Length: 434
Image (cartoon, rainbow, N blue to C red; front, side):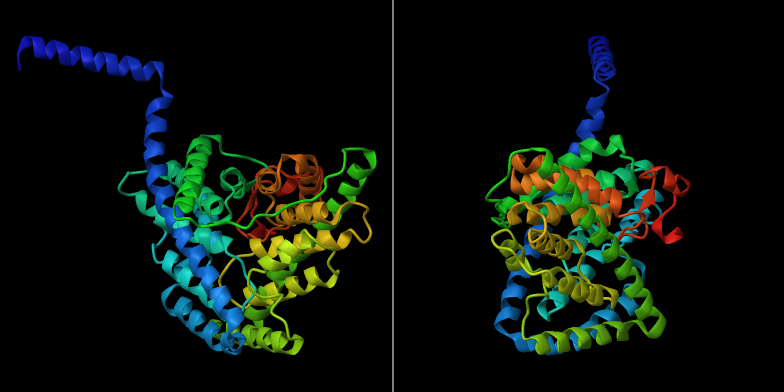
C-alpha cells in the first residue's frame, strides 16, 4: 500500500469515526432497521398465511357443523402433541414475557408450527379462542432465531422479543401503532422500555405492511354516531369503564381458576381438552347455535349495529374459559373483543350512550383491563374506530385498567409501577407470585 493510499485510508477512518460521533444513533438505527425489516417481512407473511387459513377453517366449520362432534378427539391429539413433544413451549405467551424479563436459551422454533397447528385445530373443530396468542408466539419463535446470527446480547434479545410481539400483534389485527405500544407495555405494568421504541414501531409497521402486500383484509368497524363531549357523556363513559374493568377482572380470575380446576382434577394433560371438548360440543348442539365459538367476528360487527342482549357476553366468556382452560390453543384477545363489544352494546339498555360507541369502548376497554395495556388499547381504538371517538375510548380504557385491579390473563406479567398506593408493595412481582 502506497503512502497516499495509507493517508486516504486514515482520513476515511477519521471521517467515519467523526461522523458516527456526531450522529451516534445511526449505527443503532441501521442495525435494528435491518433486523426489523427481516423480522417484519417474515412475521407479516406468517400472519397473512395464518389469517387466510383461519378464515378458511372458520368457513368450512360453519358449513359442516358436524365437525364440532370431533372436538374432543382433536383436543386429545393436540394435548398429546404438546405433552410429548412441546412441553418447553407450552406456556406460550408467558414464555415470551419470561424471556423479556430474563433471557435464557433461544425460544425453540417449533413453537411456531405447534401453536399454528393447535390453533387451527381449535377453530376447525369449534373451540372458542382467538388469534393473538398464535400470532405472538409465531413471531417470537421466528424472531429469536436471529439472536445468534446477529450475536445479540442479553439486553438486545429483550428488545428483539418486544419487537416480535409488536410485529405479531400489529400484523394480525391491522393496528401497527397499537401493536408497537402493546409490545412495549405488556411485559411490565406501569413502565416502558424506551430503548426498544424504534425497533418495536419499525417491526410492527413493516409486519403490517407485509401482511397487506399479501392482500389480506382486516375487519372494519364503524361507529355511526359519537355525541358531543359534555359532562354527562363523560360520566356515562366512566360508569361504562367501571363495568368493563369488572368484566376484565372476572375473566382473568375465571380463566386461571378454570385452568387450576382442570389441572387438579385431570392429572393426565392430554385428557383435559377431551373433557373440555365434550362440554363445548354438547353445549353447541344443545343450544343449536355456533354464535359463541370460534372468533365470533360476525357478532362483534353486529354489536356495532344493534343493541344485543346481556347474555351474549356472558356465554362467550364461559365458552372461552372452558376452551382455553382445558388446554386448547389460540388466544384470549379476540374473545375479549367479543365480550367487551357485546357487553358495551347491552349496556346501552342502562347507559344513555349510542350502542355503537359503547360497543367500541367495550371492545378495547375489556382488553385493556385484562392485559393492563391501556395505552395500546387507546391507540387501537383510534386506529379501528377513528380519532373522533378517541376521548371516549381513552376514558373507558383508563377506568377499566384502574378498576380491573391486580389481575391479568398473563401470569408472567410483572408490576413495575403499581396502579395506586394500595398496591405499591407488589412492585416487580409477577402475577404468578400473587
